[in-house]
Length: 326
Ligand SMILES: Nc1ncnc2c1ncn2[C@@H]1O[C@H](COP(=O)(O)OP(=O)(O)OP(=O)(O)O)[C@@H](O)[C@H]1O
Ligand code: NI
Image (cartoon, rainbow, N blue to C red; front, top):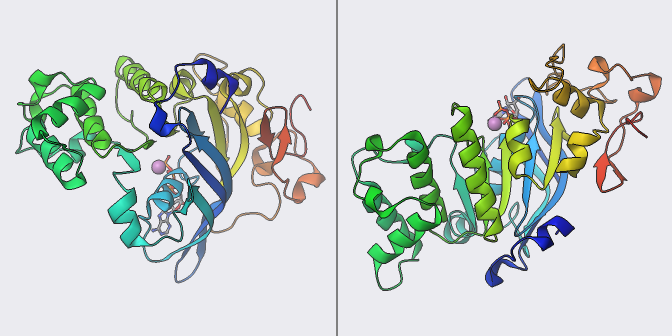
């Protein structure tokens, strides 16, 4: 837990000791004529009361990483490494345990598209009550429990009698979040929760995530949107071509990016240089043996033919032979 986190309101008692520790998580997809290296040696930790943002270009492996944690990868996926949720290894515990004890109960999924998560033909309240009853968190009064979870997602009671199409985008997102909270998970995974939303709604969604973090949840936020990530994340992990290439506390990453790829992502922001990074990432079926970013990197030289390891620098880590400011 970072010093900044400790200064904030304390996570609720029950969440204090929880952590997710991912150690060298790799995912390969075997295809008839090729192997896709979707995630390679991902290593990070996340504690209750913290938000980690995982950022990187489309196709770099972010969603595959999330699916691996939830046990939702297809049969052709080959998974290595460990992902300890407290003492339980999510990668080896098996589908029965994941389905009965983990998904929805210890890990909640904040969906990408709330509309797709809600059934159009039933009121939000009835869906919430059903989820609560399936997850066994109703207590004596299912209606009171529904109101409680709606409240935690800041969905006013008056919306529980409405159908999803009667809700604005922001309220639909809150309804979906209420469903995600209904099993009392302490870890929330949010994969691109703001895709297609306008800026005010992006900011509102990030503020909601920040509130849940301050209430003691751990949040793994997957996003393309660095500006949104900055609003809520305590730390950022930057992923390129299946690997995490830099992690740092959010302020440090924005003020002093060490990996040239991180710097390029920041330069592409409209509020900064607005200079897009030319070129494309390598195919995940044909990753180079050296640094995968070298082909697009102005600092690359022959040393980059050998792949740089992720090493600790200040409060973060970087995988680069020529880090900036180093
Ligand atoms: N079942 C599968 N079989 C083969 N390859 C797959 C499979 N699922 C995903 N991939 C590949 O794994 C890579 C990583 O995909 P992933 O969806 O994790 O990217 P992402 O970083 O989430 O991108 P985006 O930002 O666009 O959501 C992609 O090249 C994708 O084509
Ligand atoms: Ni994705």
